[in-house]
Length: 128
Image 1 (spheres, rainbow, N blue to C red):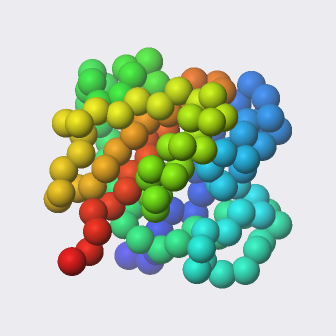
Image 2: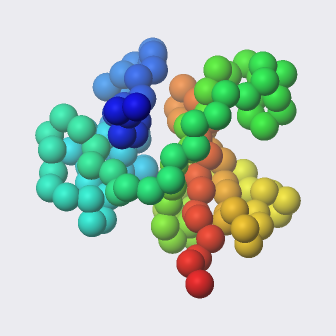
């Protein structure tokens, strides 16, 4: 079929420069960011680590994320506890729920960017 993966995520923002900086500062995502083991720095893109990507349209009335939002960004993370500590120290509101986590799927947390876009953080289960 020719598709190798997602090449980008483009969305509208009221203040693109400030929002871009927020993603770089708090999540290490955006131009010039490199995930550990993902290669060399590229000034205009984020070099992400390869791994699973879920591509799934949801019903318009799904309660999985806010119904007034068209999308929710899901980011694979490592060291969820360390990341949550950093986000908490920066004053970012974090939501976790015990029922979201399972040994089969891993751990989840949710935050919102300064423009209210939902972000789900996902730490995959440890490989045995």
